[in-house]
Length: 484
Image (cartoon, rainbow, N blue to C red; front, top):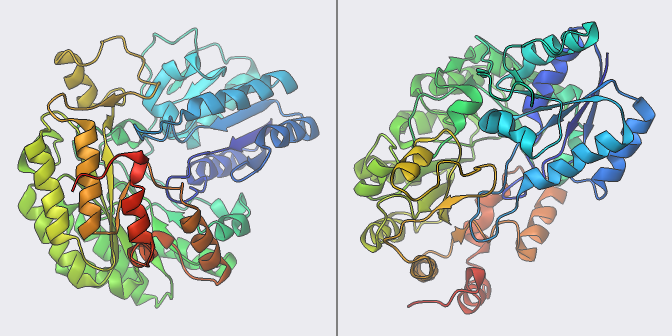
């Protein structure tokens, strides 16, 4: 069949995210014998017009639309990406008679409910490398009305459909489908998965709905093969391990690093998720030898009360230890904290902010705060909020929905964050990200100079350059008054 796969992700919270998931599906669909075309609308000035042009030129029989993000998960300036995706679906309906299939992380999280917001014929849940070609075969043979594992339709919205999970997976083949030069100009990193699935139980996280709880790890030699091949073919300035937790279990992360070192690959590396559960001086030393320049660290809180509430599986002592080891490692790090979860009070907010002021006020460290936690369907946070009467049981969680503890005032929290910025200029609020002309200009200059991303690792320096600290104090994030 003639298949057009479409990727568009309007989120710009940190870096443009390349379509690694859709690349996996595209390669599998081509291997199944179909005529696959791929259109990446990221960064396009007129995405709807570009999509119309591709539909007219190709005349596809099936269009697959990847939906990565439901929204931007920022309470203070919510952006509902499903609404934008609905416009793409409307273009497909108006310009083509193709069957429309929805997939991607957002679809796996929302399930059949996504079809209430985006006008698709089918929704593929979970990993689509086997499910999507199976659906194409059913469409081709006229059997698409019969139940297909991991596929939902409006007619079968009430039927149980378990997301698909592959027992093993390999390289993404992203190099076959994207123009990397556009991503390089935007400061993107090349995504690499070393494992799928996460066995942790964080209350707010919908990752298990996307990839499951059972970890399926790639052999380190396979990961190094992919990096070596992409380095030779494409030459990206940096690779990013996009596992939800790169270092859990730590032995696998260390083995990946050791294989890269053994091959003497001269690459720049970063990791999306480093968890305090799996850190050690040994791991960070291996990461440095392998070529890591930076990492993102995700404790979410530095209060025993809130770490238990969020079901993180570690305590404040592990967070302190991670801070010490991260500083000693010499790697740039971005730390993420979420304020306002169940049980949050002024005292617990103060514990987290005091930790940041005391332990993370060092060069090379960026701290990002979110106030209000996005409630996603199927999570423990959603269930707890319903049981506590804070959320209606029939609430459509496809729409941006946030939990904010009734025991703490949001204006006070934002003011306390602004006060902390005086001691730690490299604190940012999620509502600030992607909005600064200063950051955008610097990012473009670094990309033009050929500097390896991610460029957030330069923020600790950039946010200390006069007169930036004074301007941020004069005009604090979100226009909130500074509370000294």
